[in-house]
Length: 238
Image 1 (cartoon, rainbow, N blue to C red):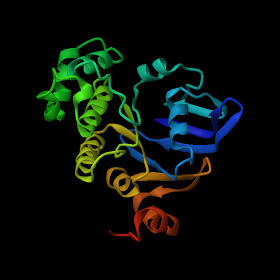
Image 2 (spheres, rainbow, N blue to C red; image 1 turned 30 degrees about the vertical axis):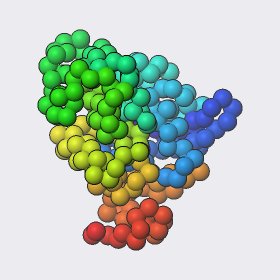
Image 3 (spheres, one colour; image 1 turned 180 degrees about the vertical axis):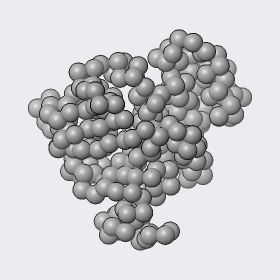
Image 4 (tube, rainbow, N blue to C red; image 1 turned 180 degrees about the horizontal axis):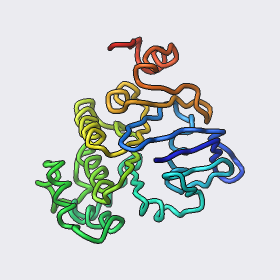
């Protein structure tokens, strides 16, 4: 579905990501993990169109989308859950969803919004509350809901667990895993590799702006770099 091949992405003349090749297939959940500065968020910015590729290619279902603006990529079915949530704090939960729904199909808006409330019942009870007054976990639910109400085909999540208590991000992780089981493609950027491996079936380890390891979850669990840096000795079968 989505493929970056030999991609170079950066900020002006400064290149952060080098010769990056990754892919996400239809109905597949894939993660990117790596230390701060590895190029994870820059990669996402390249995917959604905020940072242009200076070389290499990005394709969607085999068609080059490197010249498309962010809103055009959103229309193709790529939706972002940004790092830090970035909800509209002065708007209500319902209004946040209504604004996001405009990026999706023009039909069934009310039905799509009610579908988000069905998925996240805690938001349903707060539909008239200002988003800025929600807890961090509720804001992350709303951020995911804003992406889902667009009816995407690929959900791109930047740091799902950032700033959240373990019990909350584990609940959200189960929600995302359910979306993947239902057939939605997911690309998850995470520093919490254990969480990422519970959600996804395949992944990449980035370091210095390039891929240094890739494989299925079971394959990556056997790699010493993953065990020592991210998994606390977690081995195959755990």
